[in-house]
Image 1 (cartoon, helix red, strand yellow):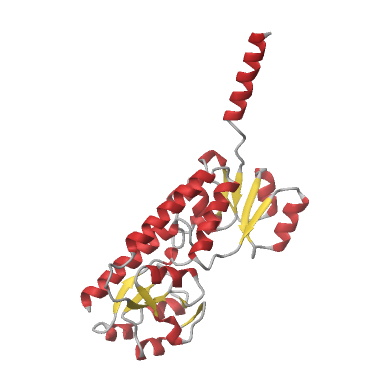
Image 2 (cartoon, helix red, strand yellow):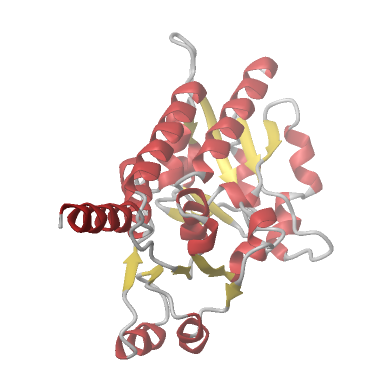
Length: 276
């Protein structure tokens, strides 16, 4: 009898040591970037197709090795995930279809603060069954932000995020807060931009910031916004403004993307300081 009890206890211990980890589908590129950092590879049933975009993805190499979907309920149903991660702004019909199929989902808003972005990391990690990995990733992000901060006594540099899609990040955005942490004063407010908005080339030429974080035009597919960001008139500001290429893939997501984002912002600030 004692032996049977011992064997049963050992079996329970083994069962408890290997709990079921949820299979996860992500329908959002920013959530994709978090998920690949906190989940086991075998848990990732699919990422969003956006993460395979060579111009916009922050995780292109790994995304190409994992399944992806176009976000349809039919695709998700075939994968039979335990949980689906998506945006609160996603297609409501898809969300309703998933609910009818009994697929559990967690929806996330776009974080507009650093604290909100770090909390999102924790939530995605918890959904994947790895809260400890979420905390470890938060510590890495915090360390990167601390490393990007200017030294005491350094004067901040005025800067504008000027992306090929024509948008500039203003007050009330995560990018605005992150720019501040990296020693940059966001010049968007003086052009009348709050949250996200357009800055005309004319206004930029009339009142340039010290630093222009210019997005990269899409290869072989110039749009009006691409032509603005690479307009020859901007060369006339060469003596007054430092222009640094800032990849679009670093401009719109928080989470682990911030590690590279703040490093790029700090390097841009130093480039502007050297020319001042």
